[in-house]
Image 1: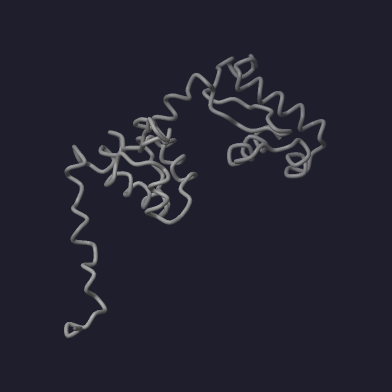
Image 2: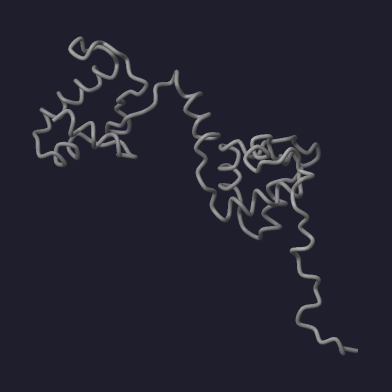
Length: 184
């Protein structure tokens, strides 16, 4: 039963209630509660039967359910791994916002939103959390925060400075498309 619960908890991205875990493995809730407590003790190094080794993760009861989490003392190393060693792909919206910030920095969130013609609040939060952009300064008159890119972005792009970004002007239309040459 413990190994079944462990397998479910390894893939769960939301806390799982005792009832849902009991239903998943077809066991009584009381037995699942005991197994969960035994797993928690095992992961915390409190179970002499498993050698008393404290694991790098813990089983926590959060929001009415149970879920595996990284131990607080390993947050920094896991964050570094996720951000630098195993970066996830950015959405199209995040890539567009990042490009606007990279080419126009320092730039405010409102200016980015004006250029993209959409709300960019959540995208900016994502880019900040991934360490690709940073808050540079607050405008003294408006209080608006100006954003710029970080060294991590340069590393991810494989460039040494923003000067190495490709010129954007060759990619822009010159404005003559759709007009006849003989227009007087």
